[in-house]
Length: 418
Image (cartoon, rainbow, N blue to C red):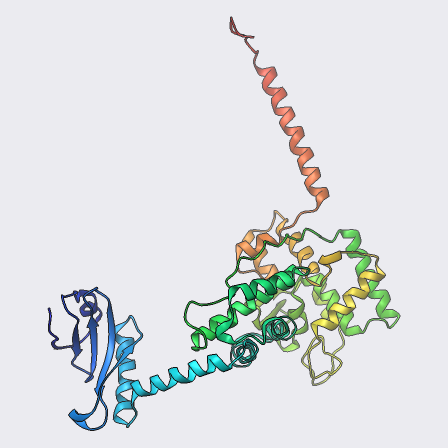
């Protein structure tokens, strides 16, 4: 078909059945004037909205391409464009102006400017407080000092790779910086601040070494005793001490303990709830150990936080809890090197759950708070002593099996064979 077709109702079947011709043609929709399906000789299809600017037939003929793959979605967008047109707005001209403004912004805005907008307009609006706070820290401490002055349209993979290399002394932080930057650049593309598909942060990262450090039972006993001693000596506040004890009793993330509220606890049913945790809505069981800690915990009238900060109206900061943990490790003479963080408690707790053969995996994941099996397996550490013991047991079984097989039958040497 070389000429435009009569007006029809553009449906999914019309879209699918439209065939390429020797010339471009348009199938016009019968519902919205100017809404059509353009079919090119190559077979590519796109939705358009066509109109004339003010002046009737004397006005300029304009077309706006509608980005949509579904006719119904395209129709709704065509209705919006038609409303703009009849309201005296020139949609195509407006788009041209927007493109000019974006092009000017690319020439003016720096990477630092875009990162600030990304945190303010995206991260703080859509991400959990703990997450956007970490994004903001990465932006301010790592990204902006390294590449913040570069113009947004001039940032290249080599710049990102250089930043990553310069921060190689802290590989985990360096990798996190690249990932945050990648999210920011994808956001910049979505908002027209960089060309689509130009994300410069998609560079190859070196695989980080899996941390194998795991607390032993004697170390946990010493740490818990150290918390009690430090609290008694007034070197640890009661709130921080409670937070650390709850970490060992629940295996929660540090942020979950700091954000735990009395109103989200049901001690009668033994359930703790987090309406907006790192992984969304979360429920965890409260064991007898944790329940005892919570029942003994002091409560401040009018304060909902289980572990309030120095300002009772605010939650305890993770950094404050981390500092208390470091004091407890020093007092208990427990050394963890680069692995020393509150998350090490969660790894210890999770390992105890995931290596318990009496608990089914789905139940184990519910206790720990994991939604992905892959994530769960990263927490299923084993102690070196357990590995050595299991290997020795398996070796004894192999030797015994070979000996038993030898006793059951004789080895016959065939003639001519040695």
